[in-house]
Length: 309
Image (cartoon, rainbow, N blue to C red; front, side, top):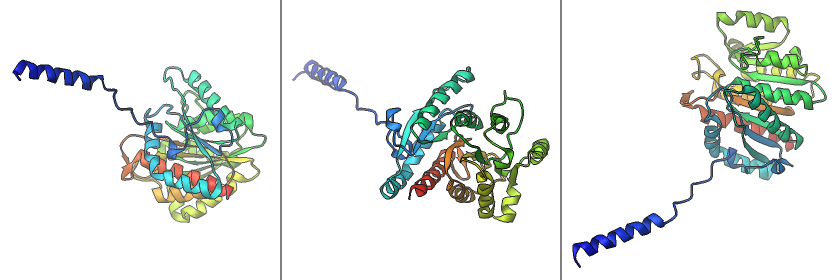
């Protein structure tokens, strides 16, 4: 066989390889390996995960989903023992240049979840993810809503344009949340937040700083928060800003273990909804922020499952 014939055979072999179909891409990870669902699939679900990367890292929901595969066994075990059903309802498309249109889309997704009788678990995004959730809940609930927020700031500004910083002021204006049922745990603001603290105290809302948690202990603080938020309310909303954890935004904060314990306590009430926000790329508390968010989300799922037991 001469060299030309050998080259011809190589060319033909290359063409054959090129004609082979590319290997199929693996399906994207879903939250805790739960089934991905359309609106119809929400029927009968207890909880629906929904990505809403408003104002923050656009890859946060995807990263949390990937990290949550570690806890897929938790969900499978909880489903066997309690019958809990979780659905991943995908992501809301975010248009950073058109916040109003994004909120409309978020309202539609959230309305689907609530109409099916499921509890929404929002994966953000910055703290503004709370606002559309509470706006939709305000139109669905018959009674008052209690709020427990694990957050490093009080977010009580009155300028609506700063959505994340004014989220709880907007919640109070909706009329569904009363100040006496509003609790913030883990606040560590500096002197520039003194005005917000005065406003919070004047409203007679409850706030527990990092120092308060150290002094009283996280179990006591969480139980008191649950008692205050639940008094006379129909349901509870829980928000977790990962910036509250030490080492994420600031060396001072709650420990990841304390936050996990507290979530297990406050989420034992009837949840109307929950969000995990402030998920950023890189490390937080010595582990990737998405991994921390995934663990806390798994704690919420476990608490919801316990209510079914």
